[in-house]
Length: 173
Image (cartoon, rainbow, N blue to C red; front, side, top):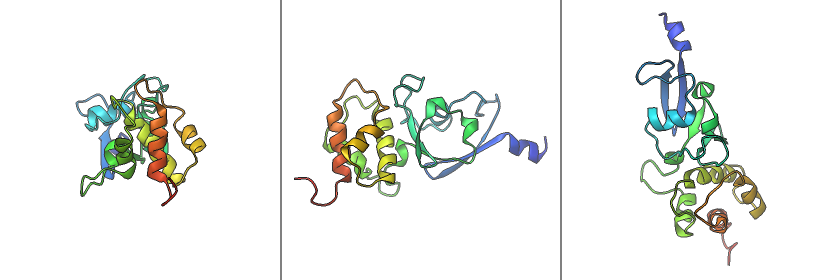
């Protein structure tokens, strides 16, 4: 197989700042053409923070940020991600210090999770929102999180956690 043929059968993507070249095929360690991004993140790259909830794009648990936008990774084939920049929940904390992202810390401070299964997806949608609008309105927060389904928590705590993490100094009483 020529280098050019081999290159065509490789997916290049950057996940949490780390570059990966993943072979496409049916050999051990390769990405099958039918593999979803969720499967690749969890099974191939060992990044298990991204969860598989419904596996049908209905619950939002698998949300990651790709090229600056939140996507449902269970509905995205890995082969469609060639050249993409992906951020998962593991990519939010400060890599040097291990300190939580302010949004993550606000979720902790506001008890905005219980079992935590859907929390990574919710956090990724909230992160994408605040990347576009550092001080979103409550309606914008609700809209950004409308695709997430959680059975454990009150979404009021989630909204408050995002509000607190994005509040301008002195904005809250």
